[in-house]
Image 1 (cartoon, rainbow, N blue to C red):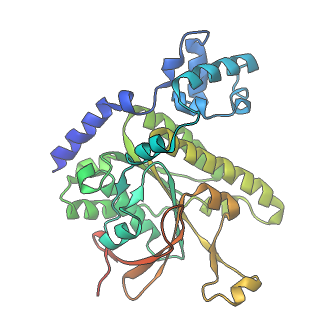
Image 2 (image 1 turned 120 degrees about the vertical axis):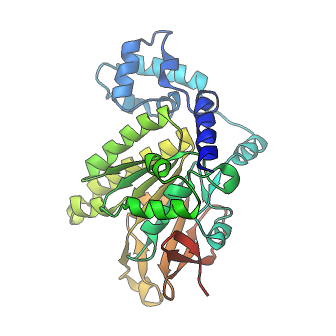
Image 3 (image 1 turned 30 degrees about the vertical axis):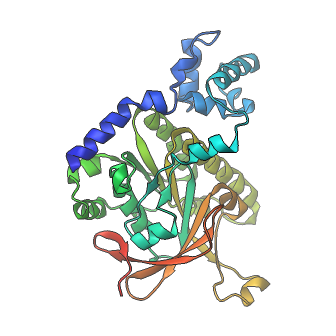
Length: 338
């Protein structure tokens, strides 16, 4: 099985230039020099799509890129990346190509309409010990499975901000699926983030890595923890939200460009306003509207009996607000125990 998965991944990487994002070197010519390409790459732009989606004011902040040059770059990029109107029929056909990654639990997959959706951001929030990190570890393995086994046939990128990543958990999940342990670990690119600036810089590196190889999943566990320590007090709230907004914008860009599933975990705080008095569950995710609007699907995890946990669809453009039970086992996320 491991051999089959490796072969499938190799085939996809060979086809990356044909069906995936276009490398930024395609812009060279027509007034755009190799020196301009190098400046863009040093600034974190490694694909034609990343340039096409960027506002001009971002490009002109790059040393050596004038306003006229930025206009030329954007003009050439727009010729290669469709950014106009399309019909709902065409968009529906494009949506049909989206892959769902299995969570390890059939009930949870059913709740999500098949699994974690690629090409969008899924936020997972809840109190400690509700299964957020365990779900991330399971997905880091299942995203490598063949598509016919509800995988993504791609690698995983894991940004850890709290020091909770454990390779041993990946090995246990890999054994459950009969996957080769060494290959599973090699297919997970791991980085520990130490502050919010470093966390953002890692996404620039992620873009370069995704342009070179096939990734199906990007995990940030947790997206907000460092913001709570780097920015303290109401006096820094505006600065925090601006920085967080830029970070979420970069995540959206990666999801759009490379079609990867993006998973972010989030913490909760007690809701102390008058609304909470009449609500049995007074906890809400942190990050405010910045996180809420950037996340396509928001999942709320809470504790059940024993090893069981409950997942609720907190917000989604297409899924009903329902719940499902799952369990945390030594082999990762599984169906709930009776």
